[in-house]
Image (spheres, rainbow, N blue to C red):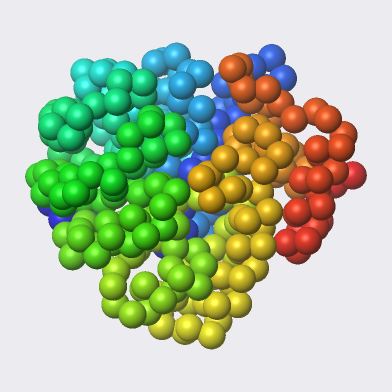
Length: 313
């Protein structure tokens, strides 16, 4: 399997998982959120990724999110399901369920806390990616797992060579390291990374590679969707305009290392979604805390306003 076995590209939200005020899984909210994404014209979605708070869900809830999500999307855009877990066996079982639910692919980080060696990384991804015949997306997430796959010479190339790997989501905070990943593997697999800006446009327009971005929450779809559509058809001037508008929003909310400007990234995301009246936000689950400070909420509303949105009072 390689990049030509999938059509994955463009702007994808990493969907938050909605929870009710009582912290129960909000299935109707999730379906409504995915319907909103369809209206936004997104090019794919990631369920149960970091933004989806997989770490605070039970295995049964994670399976249910996959089922509800696939049913709600109904084939209108690709659905990739996150199966990150502390062991390969757990991740493989979630991958098999995702396939049974009708997902288009699966994704995983290396196990959190473990700090696996390069040989252990390859062994983990080999086992999980071969649990099904679904296209697999490797997720490099140093902020969450304290291991930067892009920092190990040759590791991304070795992962790209695994039989079922079709894509890499490289969320290193080091843009030059992400560029090295694009250069090393984009001839073989799809690469999603920090591309929704003028530097990313230069990569794609210059033929160096890069396929898309997976963005926490999808608030930026208003700008990210037309950016990638313009970039991938070679309309540089239009793409630059959308890139600048997207960056005003993104840089106002997220630091270069992917930490939040005002609170934990998922907490401030859900606060922003609630301010915009978007479906499927609700609350976060512990250990995360909701943003309730009126001063912080006003600051988030200010970023949204500056970026061209109209938050609710």
